[in-house]
Image (tube, rainbow, N blue to C red; front, side, top):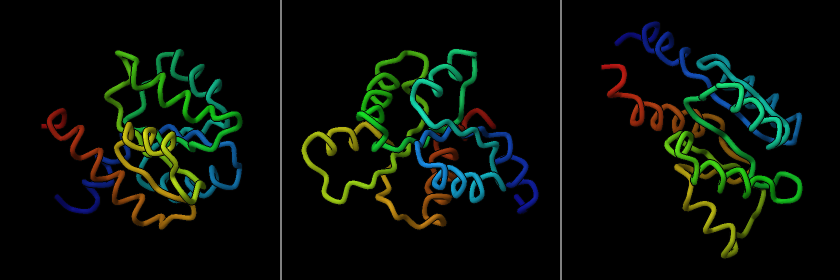
Length: 139
């Protein structure tokens, strides 16, 4: 597969990014929109509204540090949902030392990045997760 074909395949995937930081949303949008359709939401409530409209992203990127620990709540809700539990989840966090609660949340995710993170590593992880999850659908 050549680079152009790979980019076309990636571009069909839609990523939902949930983070309350406008700067982080801009960074992630700039980095990832070259290869994916990116949807950004600043709150869990906005994200769930978007999902309830019938949208189904290929992958979710969630900041665990959302106000009032909403990042924990959305992660829990997604993982118990019959509709959304199989969507790959990438967690972002500014917590520097995972405690027991944070460690339990990290185990629910497919990948975890502590802020600041390397955008190239994030892109590689997303590609790997999508290739693993959706390889059979493309065949």
